[in-house]
Length: 134
Image 1: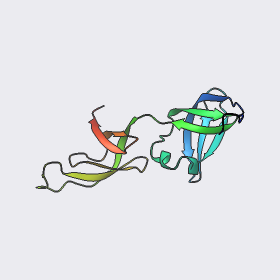
Image 2: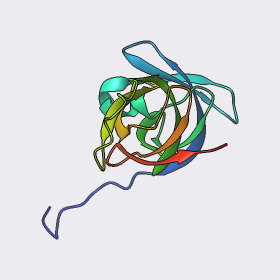
Image 3: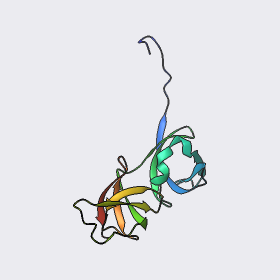
């Protein structure tokens, strides 16, 4: 833009929305204040399907009724849904394997992580941070 160009001001608003589900094309959310349900195209937030957990509340930025952004926490705790068994003798320092979380996210973790355990993942890098003992 040039200094003499004018830009229209817009008003954006942050609201809490609860994630309900996705149908493969859209995310379904509910406004926690009005209980109004809305759909947001998954294509607008392609990697978010792995970080959205049913029933969780997220902060979203709206312009009119359009979602501009959804704030995902920097770290999220997931339950390991699928994990390969570690092979006895596979104890090379730093040995890792892939696991799949309840949302379908594949993460490389240390070989001692088992199915059903909880792990903390960095949402920006999609990397394992630690095992959670809660």
